[in-house]
Structures are given as structure tokens and as C-alpha cells.
Length: 107
Length: 119
Image (cartoon, rainbow over all chains, first blue to last red; front, side):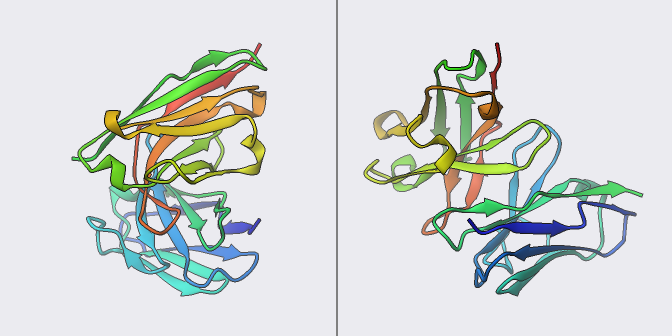
């Protein structure tokens, strides 16, 4: 299976900060990468697919980039609603895998 | 509005069985692949199973092969997960999810149902 490694595991930031989360794949996955946001007790929400395509209804402050093995999720100006855990997911192979998650906390 | 509502979770002893259901509404259920994804308490996400629109193709993660069966009833707009020979490591919130066309990622999720395997 392709391993997905996110960094950092936890990130402390303030409202208005620019936040970047990194996801690395153990082998090339082209651009077959998605990002999800999950709040406590809630289901994940799809934010980004195909590395950089914004899902309908997702605010434009969210953006994704990368290809091959290294990817980033950027929140341009952190809002109170953005404090959550973020997961990357590769769907290059038939066996999809998720990163371990990055928790974005209030500083 | 797309809605996915899971039911059937609960406490079961190791080796026992449970059947999860997911009632779908607000979209053409028979036109979509559907999936189950799980999340152990305090842990990350794991894709468990997929089923094609007509039920003719199914995928399972290795850890549940031979124990879990995904199925659907398009006439009832319902998705199911039959779980047999349950183990402690199957304890998780199980989410029903609508799979995006031609890719194993999910654009809509249910609220989840908790399965606890314990004696």
C-alpha cells in the first residue's frame, strides 16, 4: 500500500494566519490526491480533489498544490470555522489510503 | 439535498455479527458507486468497501475480506454492510459515503454509526 505522511501532526495558529500542511506519498501518485476537513463528532468534508481542484462550495481561501510525492494544503487566511483536523487521501491505486491527519488548533 | 443516514451500529461481542444500513436521498442513488469508510476512536480514516452502481463490482480492504459484505438495494435507495466474525480492531465509527464518479473519494458522507466490539 502507498503510505501517506502528513506534517505537522498538530499546528497552532491564529485567526488570519496563512497555514500550510504537507502530505508526502511513499511513491508517485501523480495528482490523485484529495484533502478533507473533519470537525469533532462530524463526518469528513471534501475540500480539494486532484491535488488542486476546489470542491464546489468550498471557500477560495483553501488551495492545494503539488504532484508526484509532495503536496500541500494552504489556508490563505485562517478563519474561526477552519479549526479542525485535515486529512490527505491518495486515490492513485485501487487501495486508497489516508494520511494520519493534521490538527489545526487555536494559538 | 443529498442525505445519507446510517443505522445499525451498537455493541457486539468478538466473533459476532452486525448489519449496517444507509438510507440515501436527494440524488439518483442507482447512478453512483457507494462506499463505507471507518474511523477508530481517536484515529484516522480507513476506506473499507466500495460497490458499483449495479452491485456487480465490489472492493474490500484486506483486513475485512472474507468477513464483511457490502451490498445495495437500488429500489430502496439503501446501502448495507454485513459484518461477520467481528474483532476488537473493527471498533469504529462507520460512515456511508457517496463515491465521486471514476475516483475513490467521497463527496458526501453520512453522520456515522458507532460499532463497538467488546466482551
